[in-house]
Amino acid sequence: MEIRPFSAEEMGQARVLWETCFQDHPTFLDWYFQTRFQPRDGLGIFLDSRLLSAVHLSPRKIKLRNRVYSSAYLLALATTPSFRHLGLARTLLTYALRHLAANQIFFTFLLPFNIEFYTRLGWGAWADHRLFVLPATSIKANNQFRLPPALEERYQFEQAKPDPQPLAGIYQHYLATWDGGLVREKEDWTCLLLDHTLDGGQIWLGTPQVGTGTYQTSKPQVYALVLPTSPLGRPLLRELAWIDQSLLPGTVFGGTDGKVYHLTPYHLPETQPVYLGRITSVRSALEALTYPPLTAQWTMAVADPLLPENNGLYQLKLTNGQPKVTLKNGGKPDLSCSVGALAGLLTGQARPQALIESGALTVYGKNLGALLDTVFPPTRNFVNEYF
Image (cartoon, rainbow, N blue to C red; front, side, top):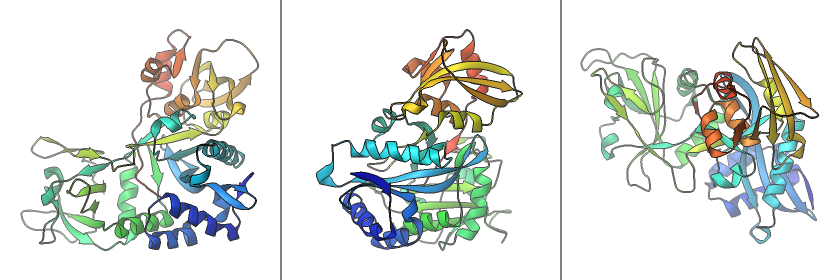
């Protein structure tokens, strides 16, 4: 067996394996394998030129703690049915992480089919991901769309065509309200909207309301991506984004009546409500992160179940927030953690105390827990892509 990137001639095998393991619209896959999935971004395990297992390392730009980095979205990890339960997925993931580290990608992410499978292999929580259930009356026959009162007070919604141009600017403003998430470029929008419309999804644009029954014809300020049908028999809100900074971001809306309105979270069968992140190189990750402007120093012992080269004792020294990372040969650590726990700390999705209580983080130094809270403050992260 050998592990390597695909050649152009082998992409046909990659598609056959994809179609064997996943159920996606043929029109979407036609576009995906022609445009989105380039041979150099795929890795496969081959036996005598036969593809046994594959994964797509889709290049993306992400935001971590309000700074943009190059990353890769691990997609469509699949193994030929007759070769499953032989450890090929683990082997391929290990190779993929090293491949990314060698290409200066220190952080990768995925939407897990099974959270425990990946957390055992060193992934940690990174970003929220979920749909929201809407009332059955959300979509009306008169081309009107209903959302929580906090939005209806401000906007009139009308259905729109799948044009990324008016959506991209709104999303850019919306992403600015989050600490972490996915930076969408032109191809990302094409992928999202093609997938959405092939699933029967609708796009609703909201323009600001001025006065009673009068609406200005300015550019849209909010959009909603809606799936009219769902396993629950009710519409699902796939994504909601807006420019108005006075609205509370996320899942809660504050109305002018002083009330707070909640949307009901939901995730589709065989999906999870969280994205997981994985550090490929501990040293590179510690050096790349943005830190608060403080001066401090400690050592941490990191354990990685897939990459022994990440195991070790790291000294992190901050001088006015500027990091210096040194790999130590010996000595006692101030703390020890799994590489998955470190991913949660670096992204801000996991809190030190919660990691301590779970056993993923052990603190030996006095008052170090309070320091970790300062160095790795909590963040709000959101990703909402299936491909």
